[in-house]
Length: 594
Image (cartoon, rainbow, N blue to C red; front, top):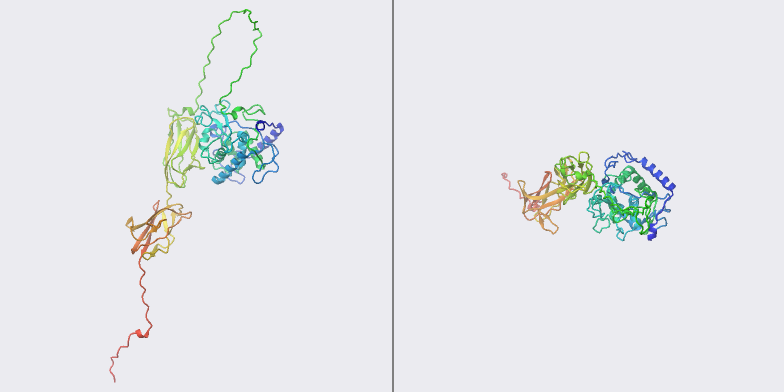
């Protein structure tokens, strides 16, 4: 199996050329700056990577990737249900555990972000070019790679310059960052994009389930529909900002869409070419899969021939020239590294953000703005600022994430994505920090308030009656509105009060019952439905007769009083009798007789 795994397949040049031309034509027709899709849906150029987008803003830090293109012929027949093992090259097949991770990630994203339309084949295409499907499926039963997959250190020497952000926790390098795992996340991206895909309570970039789910959420983090080519291109370029990378991923995506087959774990082959390898067909450098590629092996000098004028003397023969003292070695001063923009950041300043308040379920009207400054107060551009939602809250940034990384503009300002309030009310904090530099964070306080209504109306009778010790035949039903529109999910408080001038809870008269059948005269936590309607539980009466008031209130000032009357039924009025014996007797006549 090891021999099979280490085998390197080389393709004919004509195969690579034909496939590359076909993919380039496809990409050219659907470039990332397209402003409308095939259905005329307007798209936006927001969040589209550009040539000057910092590498740290991509998932991989624009690390090297495998450039091999898929074979021209797809597996035949292509599986239609499930993925049973079928014959085919190990290069085109996908290891069983890796394939399962991709499909589970797709299923989760279909539930969590259905509008994204993420296909598992896209994860497979990215996994192929990033790590050769986890180095041919060398994973254990839990999906964790056998040995860490770590890319070259991003020290600016042929790669992007990204200084350490994780103290070497993920990549073993405390000086610079390296891309890590089968989906090749850089540590600063994994810090907010990481997910637990196999339910073991950990977020491990070297676990294919965790990495695949994280990649899915990363690709779906904006309001992109990956069934639209322009959005698909944007998502891929955000993963690694290279047109060649886009073409390569699209070629594998198309290949896997036509059909693939499952192969046993550990039997896949590793691609041959890599984007940082100038020699076509050369094997990948050890740094791509080694434990710490940042530590390059020193080269062994080959023995050099002495100059022709310096012929060696025979052993024991006297030297023709007396030895001279060698010249003292000249010390080459170590050049001082040029500071990066991140190195010059001294502190963060609030760039005018105030009044972060929103009603539950609404988007905050204001966005958080942070300015990176030097010690002298000058703006620092091209610095990554990480915004993190902290505290007991279900508020998130647009897209459902609690962490977002944004690069400062020329004015040194980074604007976080819009905050979206959840249903949980109360205060929470958003903290801004500098990625790759330890400076004090900047906290922003935000508050989520209750949903409000300005009007409550009764959809049933405004006066209910009941006999002492009985139960009211009708139940209270109300509708909440705000400025005439339906107010859904509005909390309503219902209290049986002493009088319209004394809103204290009454200690007698009508009452509700709790789950244990005990008397309750105040109800809280009841919410209107999607139509703004609320029906209260059944009301009961004790033995005290009288007229009572049920008062309903909401946040926003809406109030409604319902009158409740408890009284014995009135005695019926007797009907006139028709019995002759009970009729009044005739009165004697007062007229004189003749």
